[in-house]
Image (cartoon, rainbow, N blue to C red; front, top):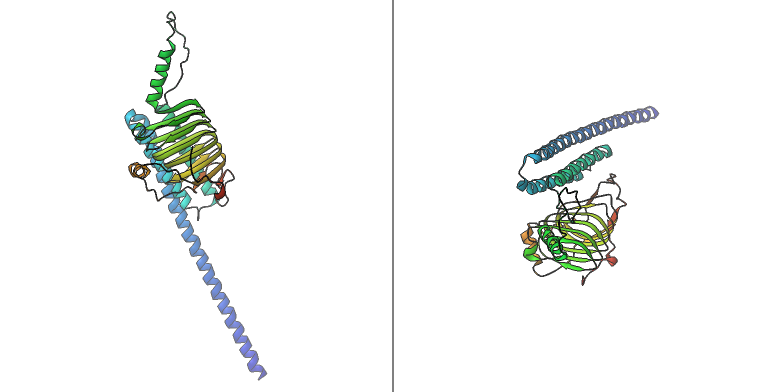
Length: 323
């Protein structure tokens, strides 16, 4: 009886070891398959990213050969392609390594910088003010104040927007801004309202201001904004060199920020007559809002929240705007 029990124990031990061996082989196979699939995904991503980046670089290179009238649409298309590529990277973060993500963000930043340089070079903004330039001719009579005011107003009207204002409430709406490029620059302690659908909005050197917009059909570019509240809707938001800004945002892509801190986000909540038709005219879906999705080019750690922006506490959000 003792011999039989020993034999049974030995057989059981052999069976157990065989089972463990087979289990180990199965795990090795699964690990190998998993690594293989991961490598295939990474290889496909790298090929796709490289092709898309090369396409954008080719488009940027072609910019100087295009007619000036075609450049706004050309640059807008490139901007959207950069955003789509950025979104592709974000959606692939699950299998990308930190090194891969960092390199992709660096490439995206290079494309964005090159696009901005080309925009500044090929489509320079009109300048304000009157500089004294050397003139070999005898000095002409200084224009009367009324004439200078008229010239300044004409330039401002051409640019469409508001400039060099303090402590005012400023409004443009409807046909004044429809499908136009709007610029707001050098404002302090102002309330600015754009009920309507402009093509783009540029904000620069804003201090202690409130800005309200209807749906901007393409992009909002905001820089050098301090202690401001922006209640804005757009396809794309690019925020640069700004701090202490509350943004009530409707954006259909991922917002981009760089060199910013103390940025607080909440969902867009401005309302005015005909806003529904403006959303329809602007061409994007009011039900698609990625207000929580921000790519911070100064923070490349995907697994950790950027310290430069956060969601606004609900109790601190303004519910009704009566400015």
